[in-house]
Image (cartoon, rainbow, N blue to C red; front, top):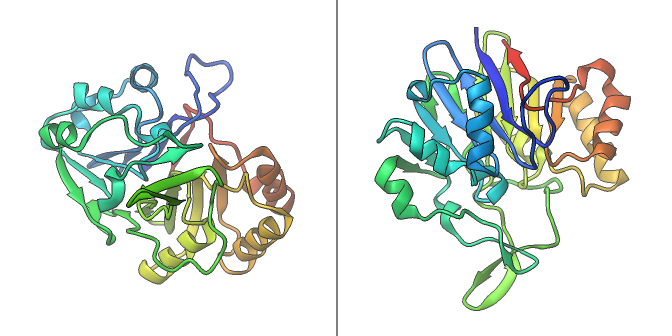
Length: 272
């Protein structure tokens, strides 16, 4: 059995002591290995929720970052403090580029040397199998559909401000006996672009998509396109849209697919 737990999210399971904050972190447990995907925005929050899950940090075999933004990387100091040294940390080579939102830094608050001192950095823009049956998507290179953009996100190159190309944005694919499970950080590269690349790269049917889809800024036409693609091209997978999805987009998806669409607050456990 494969168990995927939402450790950090904007909301927490009602009636529990899990804490919530804008961000996301996942724990993937294949039964033989454990991967932490993103770290949420805050080390104390990550450590608090991990304690509620009785997480033994020594059992984490790899860490992977979806992209550089602080709401996904802010918990790294807790990971460094608790995990074994020299475990691999997977990310895109562009992960250390400075990111800005409204011209204020919003990228990682921790430098490459600090990470290099603790982890075995594995920076690659190609799909990589981190542990058995758990893969990165690699860079989403073909983007013919709309992206998950914010007009405030920029990078500075040669003294000029340009829109963030989100080259470092990727997701995680978990191969299960039922099919492919897609875990998203924010999908800045675009949900449909991400799913399209996964369907070209990996064998099997996409059965579940969970996490941040960055549909909060999508207009009605974009949301309709997403619904059509999820229905016609991907056979209505189970959806757990969270984090940066936005309530409007969640409602549109729920109206289209009914009970196949469910929230995924911190403390949620998905099994396959």
